[in-house]
Structure formats: structure tokens, C-alpha cells
Image 1 (cartoon, one colour):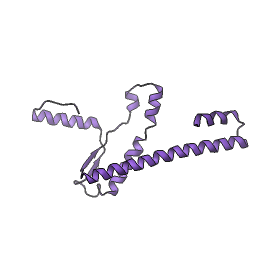
Image 2 (cartoon, one colour):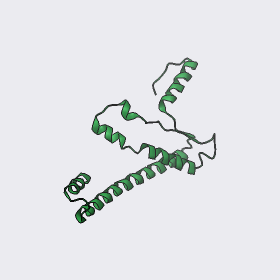
Image 3 (cartoon, helix red, strand yellow):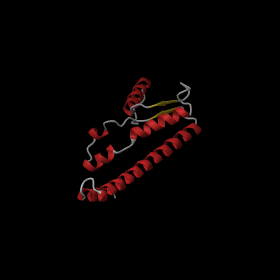
Image 4 (cartoon, one colour):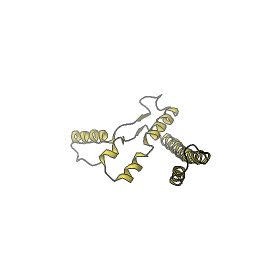
Length: 138
């Protein structure tokens, strides 16, 4: 839909009445998509925090995906899709909703740790080496 509108806009004279009408239609479509994504993220974060609260989970670990496009090469299309992930926005929503549940207020009992997964692997491997247990990939 957006590509159709963009191609129609490109064929019209800039700032003409028809150009403005098509631009408004494109903006409406983009706003609708943004709102749907925002709604989905809110519902998912709320549901996740509620389930974790019901199960009395004390710690939540969220992996850090920054720089993922530079590490893996799937091609232009897949890298573009990876770039469109709303990861940071979801992490922020999860943090805010967890704070509303009182996780940050009760330091020690309930906390939201947003750390890199590789750090956890390193900590786990160090613990296994201290206990002299065979290392298992996480």
C-alpha cells in the first residue's frame, strides 16, 4: 500500500492538491501501522510483566541486541527487517511496566536486569569452572 502511494505521489506535481491528498493518505497509513506496533508492544510488555509477577519471578534478564546487523550478514532485505525491530522501545516499555509493579522500589527482592547475554555466559562458565563441572552452552 505504501509503495503504491509513494509511486502515485512521485507522479504528481509537488504541492498540488492531488499530491497533498496522497501525502495525507500515506501519512494516515504510516500512523496506523505505528499505532498497531505500539499497541502490540504495550500489550505484550504488560502481559509479560503480569505473568512474571504472578509467577513471583525476581529477576528478568533481557539480552542486548545492539550491533546485531554488523555481526550477521543476511543480506539487504533481512538487515532492513532487523533494523526495523522495535527492540529498544520494547525494552523501555518492559522497564517502565516493571517499575510500575514495584520491582525497582524493592531493591533486592525484585529487580529488572537488562544485561548482555554474553556476560551471563561468562559468569556461568566461571561458576562452572569454580565448581569443576563440565561447561554447558546456554
